Image (cartoon, rainbow, N blue to C red; front, side, top):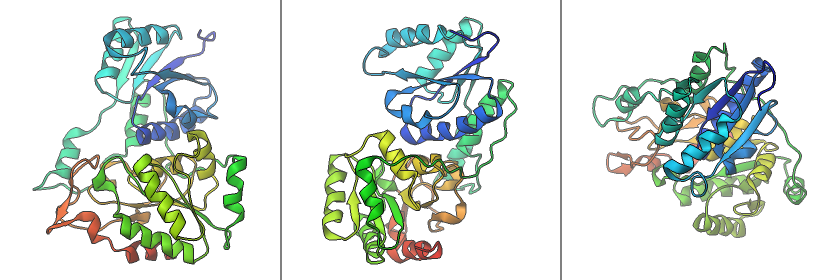
Length: 345
């Protein structure tokens, strides 16, 4: 399956959504600098849209609950991938599954390089006492390091690169009804509760944008979040919930046409970054120093407060209490609104 003389690189990042979106940002730039390389991207089928438009890339879906479940399923995946006749394997995940696959490829004499997650320095950043509060290597650079270690010179620009996609027909009306011509996306939800800005405060921000005449589009979440988003839509003019209404590919197309995005430290930030859209991001238990700021985004657009207890977590799965208050409670709506004003919203 390999073209004559064409190196084939298998890239593995199975989850989670935001991390896979960051891989998309990296590979867009990688293939521009190495157009002769064929990439086989291995990830959950849901995330295929993150890699649309990358020339020379083949997306190979991973089905963890079906044919690729357990050891037999991973061995089946290995046999599927071996048919591409890979030159090397870049493991950008370094979890149990990817490490098992890496072992199988090594046993066949295929070069494998794996992600250094920087666990030691991340632990120093988030521990309760004697924190070492300094910017760590961005996750995108850690991904790029794996590719470099396979012999591919590679420089990331760390710039937002706009990738405007055609709007779905059913979404065009959202962009036609704005009084100001500005359409702002908000991704107010996150997988872990400590990363979520309190809903009453977020609604105050939504009310501000609504009163300004901007169209506000709400992204992300499951059924419970969908109900919250629909309530905000009912209570405020120019606010539209997109939760559960569009496919991931359609959401990316809509995001690519936004004027800006307001997000948690979540997948919404990384999806907007992949599309080259500026993001104002709100940080509580987590911190951009851990390396998960959206690709091409600016620290100046991070909304957070300095406190000795922050951050408490790399991934946001642990609460961050600051003098008896959750760290998100230290960010009043006015702080977010002032940042929106600074960028002309």
